[in-house]
Length: 354
Ligand SMILES: *[C@@H]1O[C@H](CO)[C@@H](O)[C@H](O)[C@H]1NC(C)=O
Ligand SMILES: *[C@@H]1O[C@H](CO)[C@@H](O)[C@H](O)[C@H]1NC(C)=O
Ligand SMILES: *[C@@H]1O[C@H](CO)[C@@H](O)[C@H](O)[C@H]1NC(C)=O
Image 1 (cartoon, rainbow, N blue to C red):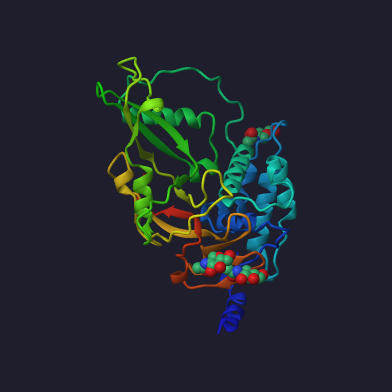
Image 2 (cartoon, protein in one colour):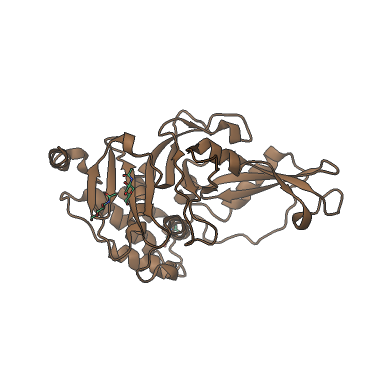
């Protein structure tokens, strides 16, 4: 009996964090992402311990109200003794200041919203207050491993925050000339990975299939032919991604919507593991990269009129809950996988050493 279960969990100590968010008019996309972030253990603790205060960028040109409102909201959600839903309206005012596109009450894309939010929070707690002047340094003579490290330190010289510590990884793309065999590499930071959904007839596909499609060797030919660094001429090349550095929190976005969005949605069932997602084969170095799932943003409905909910594993109790705007209900972990899963949040297992 679900009512008895609900009653029991509302009265237990583990009830913390089990607070719904009021829908302010088509804001379920925001509520869904906020619940996923609220259940992100280290980010939650960063707010609960007020550690963000120390990092708030206090040069007068940087407004820090977004981080402050975000932390206040997380604190309210985790300190609340009642099960009454909380209104995120002050937080919403701040995110709108940062990203005016979220003004108004239109249904938005949860993944785009997550990007804007993390970027906004990062900017307000960036440990770098004066960015170094951009210098052109050539690392092409270095071995890949060394070059990747240099590029990462250069990134940290400009972008360095708790948010970066948690969410940012590094992608390596290798371009190999089919004529002379020369391979050039480029390293880029990533905040999440947008995975294409592989199509295999009508059946389900696995998350590994999507990862393999994302990292599959691609041929650049015809109009797309890049200039080979060694031949100094445009050549047919192959391009391939590998992960150079895995983040602590890996956000995987399933590309259910076509590029021109709002036209069609793929409802393919993507089977993803809840535990022990082993991504070693995509790693440049062959060391462990094992992740466990802790939150999912679920999108149901069509591109125009859809509804977002979140499934999150409570970091205190380890139990799963459905967050449907103001309603929070216990759920079984067996219900988490569905063809509505849209954004997946994985945490690096503590046994994986980076
Ligand atoms: C904020 O300002 C104080 C001094 O006014 C300084 O000690 C502190 O380091 C500054 N914090 C940051 C993150 O810049
Ligand atoms: C995902 O959410 C939609 C409603 O938003 C719902 O219809 C669907 O059942 C949900 N999936 C699961 C597994 O609960
Ligand atoms: C979310 O709640 C609404 C009512 O507020 C309900 O109509 C809808 O079915 C719920 N969706 C899920 C997935 O629980």
